[in-house]
Length: 192
Image 1 (tube, rainbow, N blue to C red):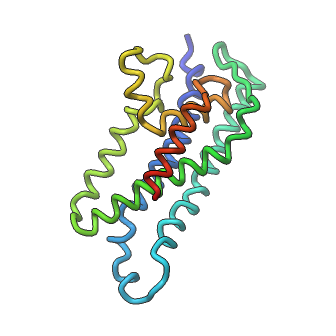
Image 2: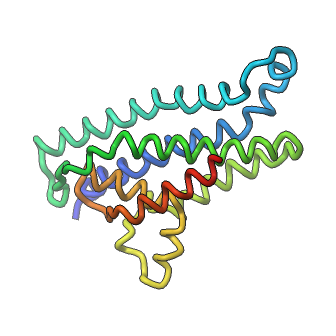
Image 3: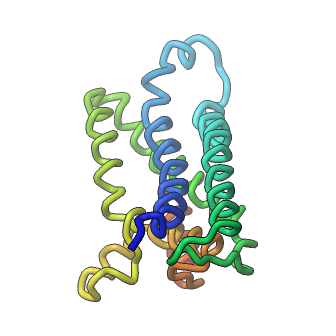
């Protein structure tokens, strides 16, 4: 079996994950990195983390364009096992981006408040985000997980977002309103 059959699956997962992880890691140090600006001029402190989340959309757009080009390539030059179909769940795509942005922003704001006091925590955050990727369905499907461990993977709010992202673009993945609702509740709790 050719390895090319998994390329779209991996690319869809890593595209969504990279946007979330960039938002999280870059906002987690924003107060420490810009302490001199915050001390000199008064302006709303949320502008800096929000600007990071918005500017990360450019990188996400480039990666999304690469995913769409790969989908176009496999549409015209199909390889065994690379069947996909875009479905009506694509309407939730802007909502999924918003969820990823707000979850990354909320977690990043919590961590940046802690890193102002414990500066060495920033090294642990980068490593932790890489580990968290393996606790999310970035490189494996949720359906491949044993039933007794599946509930623990589903506790990660990014799992349902990535599964919905894959489902909307590739038609593969587990998409339910319950799982997205759970991610929304966790995201809003973390953000507030």
